[in-house]
Length: 149
Image (cartoon, rainbow, N blue to C red):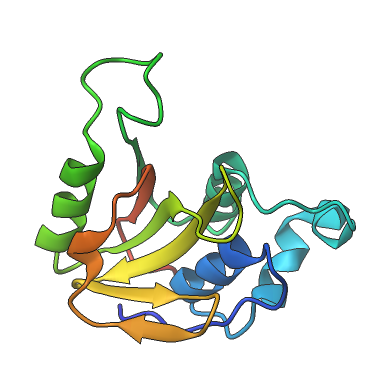
């Protein structure tokens, strides 16, 4: 279930590119049809977690969503820490993950990447970073439980 590397087409298209990767599509524009006109708006500020999960639901892709305790302090104290989320991804050799990490380019924002077997598939520069997923401190992860149909 190794992902196909997809480069984002616009600065805030990382979520669409990550969806394209896990759904086996070749372009972030292939995801447009599931999201409506909002993604073509000049004020488009990237996809929300709910929009990511909405597309996975439409495509009938089973997943689990995890948020880091640091990102959601008002929620249940049983949430995992960022380090625990990273460890979960690195220990899993079967599932793909979409991980939300702090953005380097947008202060207070997040960047989405796909992780698989310790590799990071970064849609911003279309590079694969080998063996570095353990350095991530994700604020949330979406575990893709089964290969899309």
